[in-house]
Length: 256
Ligand code: NAI
Image (cartoon, rainbow, N blue to C red; front, side):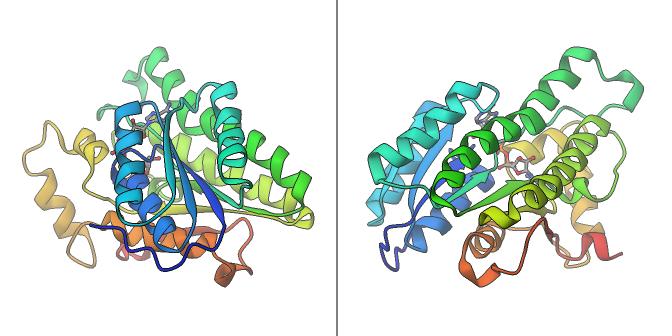
């Protein structure tokens, strides 16, 4: 979907894992709302292409290789936003990974630790760098990317479910720590979106796609753009009353 930039109002954002999927949709939605966007991703080519797509639509963006599991990379993203665009108003900590489907006791240590290092440790690294800057200017907005699997369980993905529940908890605790400092921290919890990651859950079960659609109260997957729009709202002053809030965008999945 092309980016339609409404107005360049000087605000600046970071999106981690913004090369593709939900992160790319978030980056485009923020650019459409007037934010300059720094796209970070381990996929350098993808990050640069995402930024190029935003610039082609009239927006301001830079793409850079950045690994959220490396604290220095997380700080470098903040520095890049401030040095190139002059400030940082909001950050969307979206980068995350999933494992293949396996019962809990069969998940090996290496996979478990890698997943937690990314989905929880990565967001901690990013929030530490972002909060350090935001405390200095006395304001800022952070949105973390959990999942409906951060508020309910599911079979075959215990590590992912545990990491996203941890992320919802981390968001609530951090939101309380910094609410009076002018920093607003919330967490988005999307239902299933057909991205490269969703393929991990669908692989090996040819009926999974149609079973997932049938189980959705709205009868379909969530669109990445629907998550992008919700996250852009969480980044905007229109959501100024929300602190430590887990916003589900799930077609009714958790309402059942
Ligand atoms: P995706 O796999 O399509 O995209 C993830 C992006 O993150 C990729 O560009 C990847 O290169 C990047 N990435 C991975 N590890 C990284 C690291 N260490 N540092 C920086 N970048 C890294 O995944 P998708 O579906 O777009 O997911 C984005 C986020 O949304 C994830 O946190 C995921 O857990 C969450 N989510 C996804 C849902 C889905 O159904 N696809 C549903 C709910 C939440």
